[in-house]
Image (cartoon, rainbow, N blue to C red; front, side, top):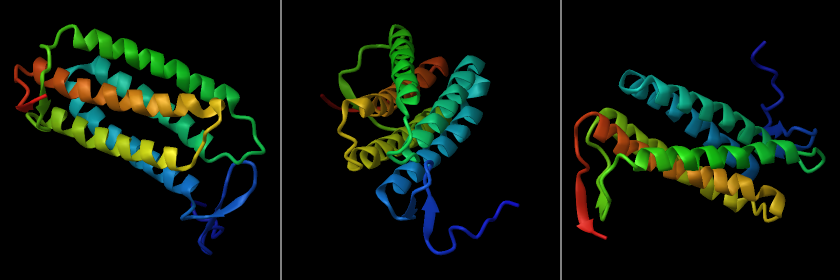
Amino acid sequence: MIYTRGGDSGTTTLIGGRRVRKDNLRIEACGTVDELNAYIGLLVEYATPIDGNIGQELKEQQGTLFVLQGVLATDDTVDVTEKVAMLGAQSQLLEQRIDDMTLSLPELNTFVRPGGSMASAQCHVVRTVCRRAERRIVALHLDTDCYKPLYAYVNRLSDYLFVLSRFFLYREGLSDDCITPC
């Protein structure tokens, strides 16, 4: 059954067994990452007709976001070192994709107005949700070195989404709607 009634009292169980209120920062971060993943699902639908490989890349990032959610939903009694290391490796892959896409784009010396096409606009929506997820994760004060790859991954994903928005415009034969020189 989909419902357990376990959360009817306003609490939920973390991986590891500890119960917390549903407004706990950890749960808020998990929920924001869940929202981010849902918006990426919509972006996949815009991206795939333009470039099926990018649609597949985005699906892979959705899988990575499930790992991130798992780390965030785990209490301090469970070792998440291996999963956190995987997030670090994903950051490096995103950096490579950013570099690859940037090679084909004109230099940017202005702010970019979000929009231009449905795919590009959706990238910006997803990017802003990603930045909110990053703020929620930072609010958890996961200050140990173990968790640094979480910060790096979400930050790099946001960078990737910004470059992807520009790349979609380029692929669609459109240009950035630039405002105010930097």
